[in-house]
Length: 119
Image (tube, rainbow, N blue to C red; front, side, top):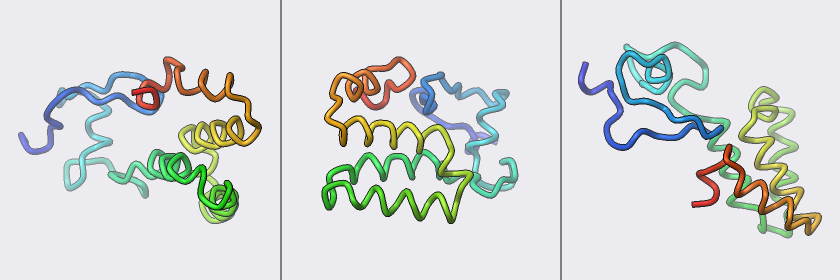
């Protein structure tokens, strides 16, 4: 159906690979919410990406303690999400900032695998 196809510019996945908008693409089925999408507990939520984004947005809250408390709860309550690439990337960025390792911090931001962080 026409409403199941994502319109607009092709999005970029968290690892930098281009996601196509063609209905034949296997990735499109993963992003469709509803009867035509695949069945998955996190389907349609992009939970790992959103949790990683939350960590990045709260880096400075309470001197970094919010990230530590949040990631601790996440590790216990949702280990699969905690060990996902987006969350681990966010924690690597947090660690580089916390250690004042700005060379590593900016290399992570400018990495070809994270184009969405540098823009």
